[in-house]
View 1 (cartoon, rainbow, N blue to C red):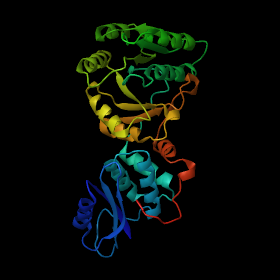
View 2 (view 1 turned 30 degrees about the vertical axis):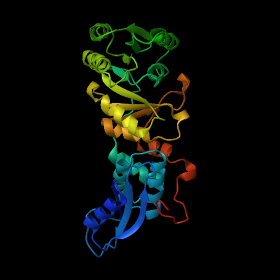
View 3 (view 1 turned 90 degrees about the vertical axis):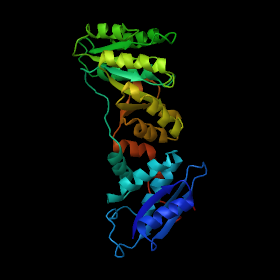
View 4 (view 1 turned 135 degrees about the horizontal axis):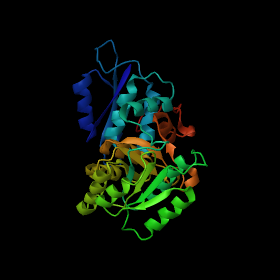
Length: 329
């Protein structure tokens, strides 16, 4: 028996998708209607000898798929993305839910941790107010500072491009002093371009920016100006505990700035991590690093599919339940 999941706005609509795709002999394995009015999901199957469907193969067990579905829903993952991940998981022979999810994550998302060595291009962190951009700048700088020869000058330059928040420059200066990094200030694109001409290409350049409301076009235009002037590698920073659908909308709104990666902070204060998945998908962003604690010394943790699967599926829930209860029962 082979499984496939269907999602629609209502249970009747999902059942109709099953009928159209698998035919009248499909076996309904499980149904689930979301309490938050986010639609309905039907898991269906058909005996492989009845028809030859290309999307069926020897994939994960029903129990593993149910475990992954339950976990992703607990994290608040948008239903269409849950379905996309389940489909991506269908061609693996992994024997655990965690490994199966890792396989799916690797197929659906790109993972690109931030560099651990100095050099161009400049890295600019952007995001809404209060997501921890300044601390993340310091953590990224510390990653380089702690690995270089202590007899040499620290190959890190921090640029404070946040003229809005009171104390922003002073906070970044304090981090720069502790790390032995050089601090520069740039209030606009022209100033940033000028500063970059004075920095060695062998240095890691990290740019801190104002907390930005992406729905205010003037604020967004300021970031676009900085990104274009600095020819930056732009990283969107979001907190992990944010509502997943809201995170997706924010990532979409920041698209004009040209961010290519997603960094997530505040994982020590979040139990639901669907925002990471939703934002990465909506913004077409590579998942880079996460911050597991606010302290500078805790650093940033690079992400790959396996590491993210471990965060999404704690050890206590890594394996399928033995009760045989279907999705939504």
